[in-house]
Length: 222
Image (cartoon, rainbow, N blue to C red; front, side, top):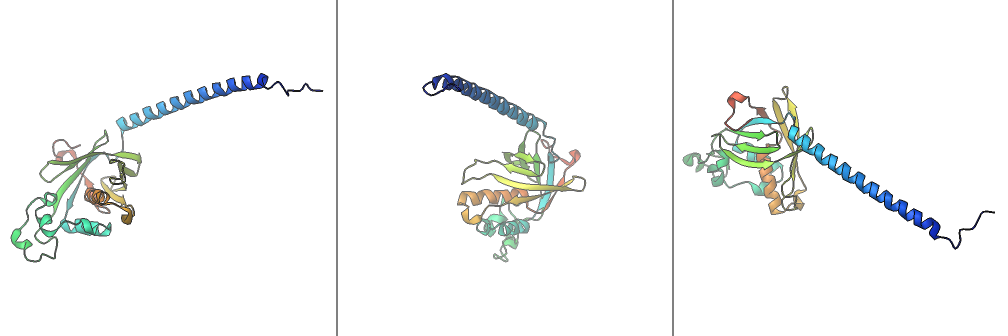
């Protein structure tokens, strides 16, 4: 007959507690090593950043395209007024005042024509926007969670959400097109809507951007 363990619980509980404590220590150590290695890996990826998105991209943007894109995104309330568009730095400052007075219902009447605008994606995950005069007018940081997605993290709050877009290349990677990921606009606060107005301006969703060769770049671009 096997000896009874009734009345002798501590003989087994003691070693079990010791083994449990050792296991927890080992799991904690492994978790720290894993997180440390993941952090190092992410840092190396960020430093390396061999994405074909790195470089300078240019598009000649128009007022009509911008207004249409805001409407398609459900952001009609974010469209600037006629006079704001005429005098907007976004389209090169003051347009033709005489022309702008002809049809105030045409939001883009008298607004400057096509203006070249550059976006620069640096290897260190910094973003810059450059106007038609070579002036840097916007800066941010971006992430590349995979080879077809870009994220501007923003503040991460509900009011200022991260902005995500998917991108695709053509013409041997000399052309890139962005597709902006939009939230439910009924759930989007005014700050949120302002963020996506900016995002529409940045990405020009569905429209192509051309890679700019070094000889045609402004100082500071890549």
